[in-house]
Length: 186
Image 1 (tube, one colour):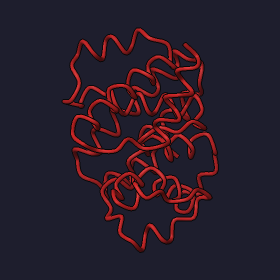
Image 2 (image 1 turned 90 degrees about the vertical axis):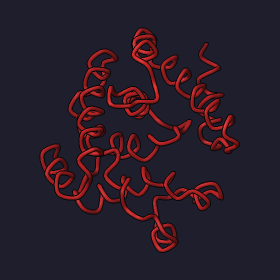
Image 3 (image 1 turned 135 degrees about the vertical axis):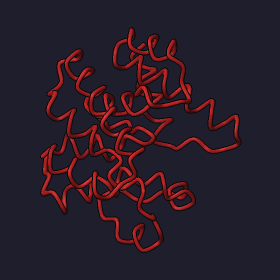
């Protein structure tokens, strides 16, 4: 499955996005190994997470999205937030991927979700900290890698929330719900 998705990506996304996806897959494997999650699933989730990131998410795509979850007002206003959900549907429909753990991880990697499992958290973290990301420092990445999985996710949510609020953007409800859930584990 990994090779098929990688081959598709090589033909259909930018080189920069491909490099990000490959790097995210490597971080996912590392974190899966550390936290006792299936590394093969992590590798697939990592390579596939942005499969729909570069497509135009217009009203036709939004209207046709049928993944069992309502499209929020925030997603309608900023359709890029839907790329994980569209990507999960695309993987299911075009690659016959039926592993719910991988699909859920891809679906919720953008903003997080309180229902995401450990693989979802791993992808959420890996997407944020992969070394090609210029918005975080090496020292921040090192700090994150010393934490347990819940604290990793919570730290990233804290950073994302501060970033969005500083720029006058709303924080998604699913991010806040995940933040609340993880805060209860501290």
